[in-house]
Image (cartoon, rainbow over all chains, first blue to last red; front, top):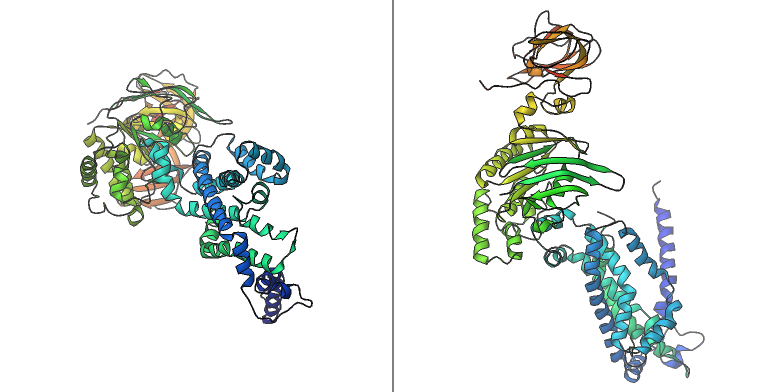
Length: 273
Length: 365
């Protein structure tokens, strides 16, 4: 049945309403970030007010925004580079030398993501403390790498599956070893796939809050930990908290929207051929 | 330079016995073709020789050295794939020189070898192009060129011409045979096309369901098929196979009363076959003639005029079809009743087990 013009309008309006309802909290957060603390808690809420960047100045000046932002960049990029370096040869072996256990191995890797993180908080926390990695960037890079590794392996695996196996077989017969195959053939041939995987890994790592909040403090905390600090015991400062949140999500939102096309293409690479 | 020997070579998958014990010796510089219907194991066997599939039983040796466990990159063989498997991100020259570059061959030497191979394969004008900017025939040549520059002990071809159009296929066929003579290298060629096998091979290996049905020169297979499978597979149009019972034999002939037809005489001096034995008489369309009062009757169902010859498809009383290659001026029309007779000196006899009863000596005129 072809939708009529009037039903199209009705559905269009409903869709917009649903989208606005979902987006409203974020919109309200952005609006609140430009209020004073007094305006932020005013009842009834203020719709019209004179915007100020006061909260942004406070949030960055007193709380060391730059350090946390820098940590976020280092941890997300570092863990991504490390995860891809580990996952690349793993996915190569899984994709091009399958055995009876390949499928099980892949499922098992994915199943580790089903474990609730909080369930292993204690052993990981104590372990990191014991080896002195608590509240270090290296420690968090390692944790995020391990957290994202299954997904990175899976994605690379599915991209490698798209490459005709005969190209690598031809190379094998031609006397080209595994390392040369990976570097000279697999890397250039799966470039777009690796880029999409890296983007996703950066985003996941940037947004990761649980471990960042629990195993870091003032040295290695990321922006997630930075936001958490604003809900401090001395009281809630809505405007500052909003400003901090905007500052934390803005970089990754900009990054994500710039790379959106590539990301979507990468994620549907295998599905729509 | 390579002599390849397979002894009782097997390939077992978990639930499937793909190659069931193959013995084969391939001489240096020989052009051997593996032919068989799809699923017969020919590609698997080639991949086992290449090292891309494990050999699960038996022995395989290259120049006297057991090679079962030698990885593909150390076997010194080159393979050309059906899909060409070119490196899409490299130019023609880079594709051809890649293996040498990885082996750290000096740049000048690579350039010289690539130029030499490119000239041989008429690729000199497209050396800077990427594979996607090439025609199918050119891609095929690049894949061959990539193999040539390595100067391998032997070439393995996996249905390399099946993605090309008919005219190009015929042309590449002769070029590959010439290449074999020029390079003086062992070549193994896999195809399902028996015409390719007949036209290119020094020796043909006919495979069926994981076993070797027959090994021999093209003319040997054509004239002396070892069994009904080879008889039906080699030759186009197919050999006619008619069943009957031996009624008499003398020093020179075996007489066979065909089911639903008269008696034919097959020249066979040295075979022992007692009257009463059920046999199958194989007669090729080109060795069967339309004659008046022939022992085999039927109705011309369909007539194909090819110009140089005419194929007459005859429907026999039992409903089965027979093909006769007739003169272009035979004047047979659809619906005509015809009778046929085989040439007794070219007919082949198969026993009840489907194996050939006689081996014909053939002499070139």
